[in-house]
Length: 321
Image 1: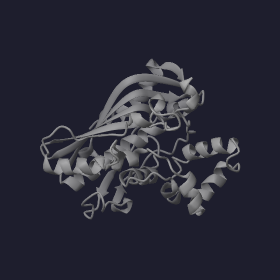
Image 2: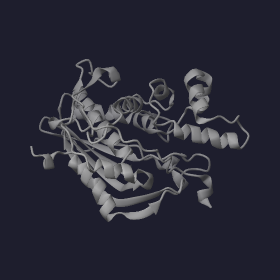
Image 3: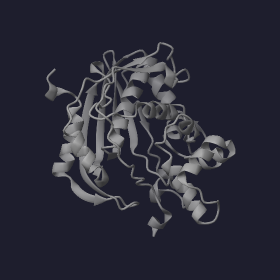
Image 4: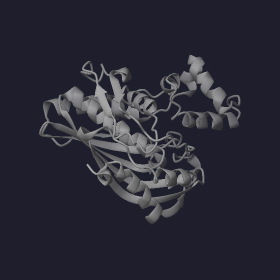
């Protein structure tokens, strides 16, 4: 395989596409500028290596624990905090800070808030919840008749028993709790970005297509690629198939302006061979899966490129006016 055909160039070309062809916008919550294109697709053959990007070091421990958090149906950040994964800390802190500003709770710094999540179970239960987050929609979708629908378990069962069917789709996009479609006070105050994925079996291979509506291409997309590639491999392991492709369809694809210098540096780097992801044979069903059953081998990336997360999106009740 020549260097120019390394699959990571799909991602690097996407960054360059945004720089060359993007339009200028602003995030409606923070005012942060961004450059955006719309409607792109990249794909990775999982038999040719695990697509954890190599042109910067990507936080694999965070990806793995976050994926387990989703797959196990959890909605409280305490699990992530306990495993030193900070990627969701900003959203419950933002909710707490808004309430503290109205005099409902004492003011806390972000560091003190996270420390209380870690050490005070009662506080974590009260303030660490992110209701209607991915795990809940995947494993306990709230039905109108009061049932909790386990979409992920249904997907696994369907793949095992009806492999030629074409309806193994899981959605996180629940209009009942989103934006102005929700009742006042019930709308999520944080965004859901990767909102629908679809499994398909061809021959003896399982593939997954993800639709992501909003794509922070420098910080978020490398996480999303690796997370859903790992999910595809885990579900293939559980259902008895070989991993096929991960296909990533991206809606609004953007670079925040406080990441532009890092992106330009990343574009100067040459991809290295992808690592391997090894799954333990003890992974036999959704209930048996644990992060320690997954091993990453041969990951030798370029140095990290740091960037500040923009706490973007979500809904504010004043938007109804």
